[in-house]
Image 1 (cartoon, rainbow, N blue to C red):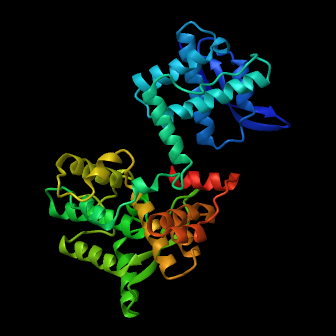
Image 2 (cartoon, rainbow, N blue to C red; image 1 turned 30 degrees about the horizontal axis):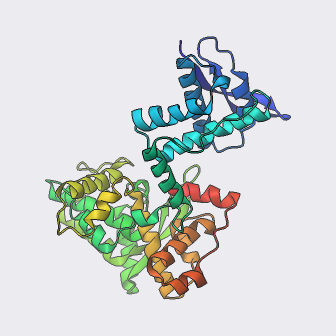
Image 3 (cartoon, rainbow, N blue to C red; image 1 turned 90 degrees about the vertical axis):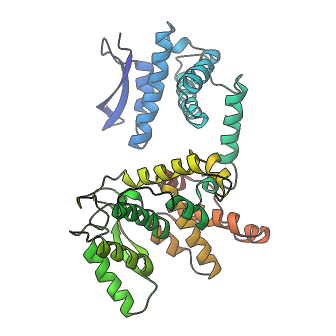
Length: 387
C-alpha cells in the first residue's frame, strides 16, 4: 500500500485552465475527492506554499490511514497525538514547524466542515505536553512582539562578527583569506551568499575598474551593480561597496596570484557553489560553540541562538546598521530599500523598526516607529526576504 500522494494537473476551473494540486490514492490512482476539491480552490497560493499545504495534509492523511482510521473520522485527540508524539517527539521537528502543520491541517478540516463532509472541524487549542506548549507559546510571543522576525537573535555586533571571522579555519592561507573576505562582503554590503559567489557580480576586472574611479574622486565607498534575487535572470541593484573592502579584495588577489576573473573562486579558480558561504558561517559558528570560553564575547548569545544564526543573518545585520546610519544622519530610508533590492518599503520597515528598537530610546521608539499594519502585499514581500 503506497497511501495518498500529491499530484499536479491541469483542470478547467471557473472558466479557466489552471494548474492545481490534487491528492489521490497511490494504489488505485483515484482522486481523493474531499481533499482534491478543497485543494483546487487553493490554486491562488504561491507555488512553494501551495506545495507545502498539499504535502503536509497528505502526510497527515497517510498517518491516519496507517493507523486504520479514515481521514474524515479523526478527532482532536488523534490530531494532537500526530503533532506531539509523531512530529515533535519522534521526528524532532521544531515547535514552529509543528504549528505550521497544525495550521494547514486545521484549515483542511474547517474546509471539510464548510463543504459538508464532516459535522465539526477539529483543531488543538492546547497541548497536553507542557514542553511543546511552552515552545509554541514562546514562538507566538516572538511573532506578536516588536521583533516578529527574531532579528535580535540574528544580529551580530562588530565584536560578534570579529569572533565569527576569527574562527575561519583553513590550512591554506589563501583559502582562509578568501573565506574571511566572503564573510566581510556579506557583513559590509548586505549581499546574499549566492550573489557573492556569482562570477558576474564579483569579478576582479570590474572591482579593479570601479575602485580606480572611486580613488580618483577620493570616495570611501562606491556604487556597484550586481545581479540579485528575482525571477528569470534576477534583478539588478546597486550596492554600496566600501573602498577599503575593495582594496583588501585586490590585495588578496595580488598576494596569492589569483588567476582568471573570479574574485571568490575555488583553489582551482572555478566557481564556488551557492551554498558555500553558508558552510563557512556554520563551520565558524560550530567552532565558537566548541571552543568558546569565558573570554569569548557574548558566548551565551551564540549558544542560545545557535539554530537561528545563519549566513543570511549577515544581510539582516547590514540592513540594521545602515538603518542606524541613515537615522543618525536624518537621511531618507529609501536608500536602504534600494541597497537591499526590496520591491516594497513594507519589507524595509522591518529593519527600520528593529534598528530603533535596538538602538533608540523609548521616546524615539514611540515617535519614529513605523506602522506595520499587515496587509497582503506586506506579507508577500516580507516572506520573500526572510525565507
